[in-house]
Each structure stands twice: as C-alpha cells, then as structure tokens.
Length: 298
Image (cartoon, rainbow, N blue to C red; front, side):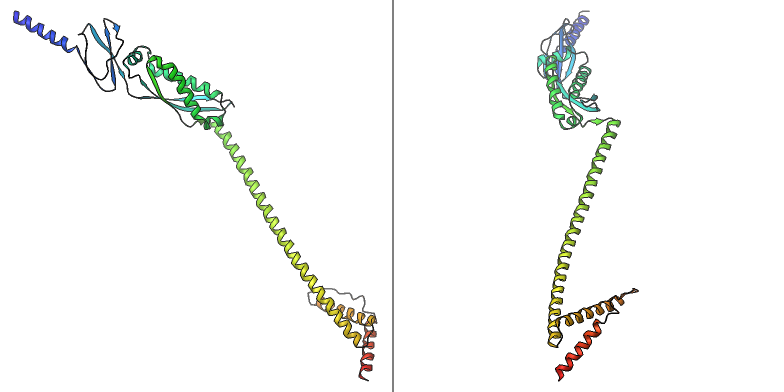
C-alpha cells in the first residue's frame, strides 16, 4: 500500500513538474494566467518555468511573424470615378513581452478589425483625390494609411510595418470612357500630323515653283536679251544693205511672223488665220531690198 501511494505521489509530482516547464518556439510568445489573472509579460522564445498546473496555465500563443492582409477596396474619387484599389497591409504583433499580451487580449479578431479600418481609411483618402492623382500619388495613400493604422493599433500591441497600394482598377464604364478619350486625343494628334505634313508638302511645292519660276524668268530674260541683240545686229545689217529703219523693221517683223506660223503649224491640228496675208508690206520690203542690192552691185 505504501509503495502504491508513493508511486502515485511521484507520478503526480512528476506530471506537475512537467507542467512547470515552458518551451516557446521561435517567433512565438506564450500568454500565461494565474488563477485566471493575465500575466503582464509574455514568455518569449526559449526555455522558461512557471507555477504548476492548475495554478498557472498557458492560455494562448501569439504569432510574432510578419503577416499580410489583402483586400480590394471600392472607392469613389473626387471626380466621381469608381475604382477598385488592391491594398495589402503587412503587420506583426509586438515582439515585446507587454506588447504580445496586448495583442492577445485587446482585439477579438485582429485581422478583421485591421481590414475594416484599412477599408474605411482608404475610402476617405481616395474621396479627396482625382482619378489621375490616384494613379500618380499612390505613395500618399500608403503613407497616410500606414500612419493612421500605426497610431491606432500600437496601443493594441500591433506594429504596422507597411501598406502597399497596387495599381487602381477602374470600373468597366470608366475604362471605356477613358479609352474613348485617349482614342480621340490620338485621332486629333494624327489629324494634326497629317495637316502638318500637308503644309510642309505645300511649302516645299511652293518653294520649288518659286525657284522654277525664278530660273524660268532668268531664262526668258536671257532669251529676250539674245533676241534683242540679234535684232539689233540684223537691223544694222539691213541698214548697211540700203534699207531705211522702217523697211528693216518691217522685214524683221514679217520674218518673225512667218517663223511663228511655221512653228505653230507643226504642233497638231490648228486653224491659223493670218490677218496680214493681204498686206503688201512684205513684197514692198523685198522689192526695196532688191533695189538696194542692185545699187550696191553697181
């Protein structure tokens, strides 16, 4: 009987002694209560001891690892555009012995409460921003939300490490309207480019025509100068042959007229009317030339 009692006592004592040992794994914290009263300090990773059960009990374990919550927040911007913001919050329970106790007791469902606060804060921040600002200034939302979360949840034993706002996703209506705006801008730019190309082309043609007319004018001027020189020489030759100035000029004009008629007749079907065909000026001039030539020969 004494042996059985002693054995029982030793077994019970051993079991109670085992309950005095606490082994806390890495990135965890154990929460203790003595007769239902929470300890102010959690037990951090490593080996520690406590009063035996049922005096002191381990009532919970707090995860000290970095955790992440993701949520899609539907927002309405200042310019009445409906967007969806993918938001991620990285947080952890405080690694301090007091902070871990707060993280265990203060919030019933920490993840849900952090998510609710993030949704509300992001909506309030986005409501004061235009759609373009929402794309360009996501850092402002991240910083503002992180600061607000940090101030609120630090007293509950949580540290907000980072808030990440991904690229906003517009609603189908906003996306279609935005695409139409972009398309109209591109069409306007294309029309302006086409008009500019046409203008450059017309300017180039005008410059080419200007240069061509300039060269053509120079050619005509040189041609007329050569004709005038030739006419002068011809007049002098005819005057040397004994014709007076009127007769020489008449002969040259009739010669040019006949050359013009001959040149025109070689360029297709044309009706030529010689208004001077009945004139005797040419025959009179030729007779005068013959008389002058006869006098020279004498």
